[in-house]
Each structure stands twice: as C-alpha cells, then as structure tokens.
Amino acid sequence: MPDNKGREALIHSLAQSMGMGDAQKFKSTTGRYNSETGTIMSNGRVISSATVIQAKNYFTSQYNKLAEMDDEGAKQMATLYEVAKEAIGIMLDSGKAGD
Image (cartoon, rainbow, N blue to C red; front, side, top):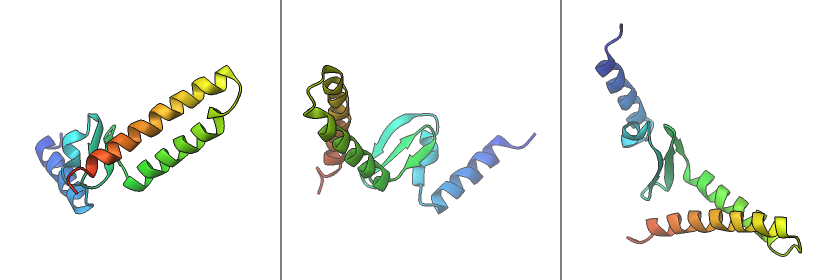
C-alpha cells in the first residue's frame, strides 16, 4: 500500500507548481473564493477567474432576456438569474475591498 503522506505531499507539490498554492487544503470543501486570484475552489477543483466572470455575464444576459417578459414563469426564472448575478457581483466586489 502506498504511503499516504508521501502521496499527499507529492500532490500538494504538484498543485503548488501549477500555481494552485494551498488548493489541496480545500479538496473536500466547496464554495471558497480566493479574492487574490479571483478563483473559486469547488469540489476539489479550481474555477478560473475568467470562468467566474463568464458565469456572471451569462446570468446577467439570461436575466435581461427574461426580466421584461410578461409571463410569471419567466419572471420567476429572471429572479433566480438575478440572485446568481448579484451573488457573483458581491463576491467579486469583496475581492476589491483592499484595492
């Protein structure tokens, strides 16, 4: 059976060399936002800042399409998209507080 400590050290070392820093510490947690890099740790993987911004743009676009519709179902979906775009915006703004 392989030495787990050695394996974990190797994985951590590889993660650091790939610029992930302490990402391994959060391998079993979700929803950690790194305001320095603009990345999100989720389910043991790093979601890039470009993808985070792409998600905000997507939810904003979907919200804009549905918000003006005269349909109760569309308005409910627009509200869900609004929550997502605002949450991402708040998260991004929290990273700018120290700037």
